[in-house]
Image 1 (cartoon, rainbow, N blue to C red):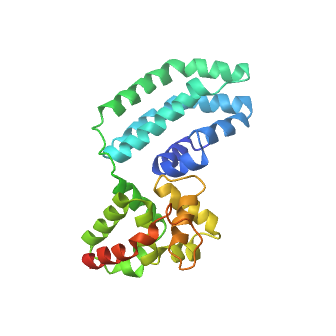
Image 2: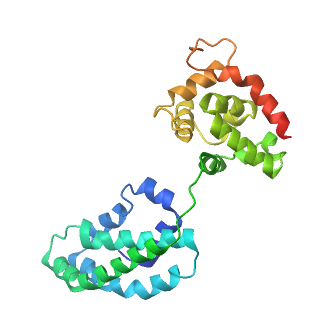
Length: 243
């Protein structure tokens, strides 16, 4: 593993991607260590404590949110080396033991630094939804672009608090669903699954599909179960109040 600093920096800057592509965060690092020659792995391990001054200096440049991400990255990396990875050769085992005291001391330091940070504000449903919608061009929609900044906040809050059927009706009115189909998804199935995640609905996106279908004139969908159609007039009124 080369460029340890760069790896940790990437992980700290991209926690969502790290979670997505490396389910255990450091799994990618572990796999690369496994594929290395024992002496190379040993050298990486023995040089790891030398990075502490640079990491400390870098972390101190930033305020709470980014600093917390960076510190957590350092902690995860040290834990992989000390706890999670099983070293198959004596060369690697000796290398770990030679720096165990230093890394344990550093781990304690970073854990204390993490505890000393002020608590992070809890994100609301609207905050989380805004982040998700931003990734998919919601604020580039014509009807959304014309709103004031406060109205954009208000419409997100209204969608977040009103549930999936209302959200689907509003997305339909704003032409967000055809936009997603054109710009981001090559199948309705993938679209339904992703939108379902935004509202903590079912994994397969069946409720999203049902609510979208309920808006169609000649639908055979169960309208007692999927009720987005009931909100068609309400979303128009709510939007007009925000203009």
